[in-house]
Length: 512
Image (cartoon, rainbow, N blue to C red; front, side, top):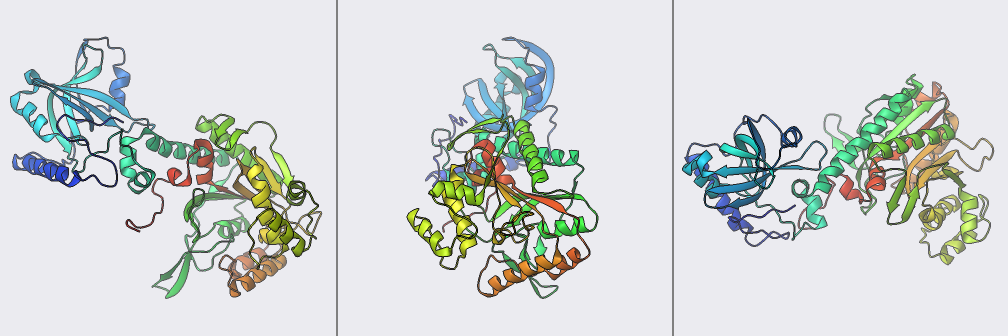
């Protein structure tokens, strides 16, 4: 985006330019002058008749030097100014309905607006200001669709200067001052609309299968539904420690127990963990549960959801990524954890492989280990470090050991395993699903074991949720469930890091 002016010195990029304070002082003086003259620097509204996009669409047919006789009222942010003696040019910008940004030229001539109004324009308008222009729609001699002003007024005076294209915005500034990023980069605005299209598509896909959306509690007495460290807070009214939800699973399953056979929640969850290019402490998930379904039905569901989302944003079925080309067409592969790991390391690994043997494999492949890990945990970590990054095309990784997912049901054929899969695309987990555990006796055993881990200092272990167990004791139908990371799905289709996909990501305080 080019933002230049013959009136205003070109500001530099972050760190904040040395002349920014001087520019702000000058702009504050202009604001004061507007108010002194009885004008409004921040009016409650203006008589806009058309958006810039509507003008461009309605008058696209105009030839060079055409006039229309149509008088319109338009608004926009000033992103370019060229002031000459008797004629001033300005480019106005609005966000546009799809984020791509729409621009339109405004022209102010001495003959049309008069000497005082033209002088005020030159003296008081800066880049970044929102202005109102009333005038005739024309095409300039060079064929540029324009509005020739009869009058103008300030719609909102900007006190800070806009950045300029050649200086750019560094990544830190883009995410910390997202409002500036949205002003100057089409890509930032387009990301907002892309994400919205994906979430809308997901809801439409689920609606076709008769799912109902519900809202589950964000503040919870007991954390569960995932192996993750929660954020803690205190509720004064109850004098009770609370946690922010790490998952929506346990409440959604309660709904299925009660007879809401197809149910989902899409919203923010919070995990007090690390921050990197693929992880954020605050992120958005879809969780959905379907009575009388299993992991294979849910595999069909998530494939449909992802392909529908790809179509909704025009991503196509072949994605070009830094990792390589990803093909979403055709059948999606299935890979069992232990055979997949065995092939990758060149030796047989089974659920019965001793811990010491797995530690030797980890040492050989430079996989970091925690001495507290048991054989099941280490096997899963080995797969994640050695095999998972190599899985470019969509692959359902299944047949996990029980400790990997305490809420999944035992395998129908091999009691050493559970019925659960992770969907890997582009070497990264995008979603997960289970044939859900509905036996309250086994579920109590699993959660009791988790509570022991928590008591021993495992901050990610689940707590024993007696109310959830009570719900299962009323009898839950067989069901399948999906967890899908929305941020990572947006990352897949855009190639952006997670902080770029979240409009206002969580950041350290400035100066830290």
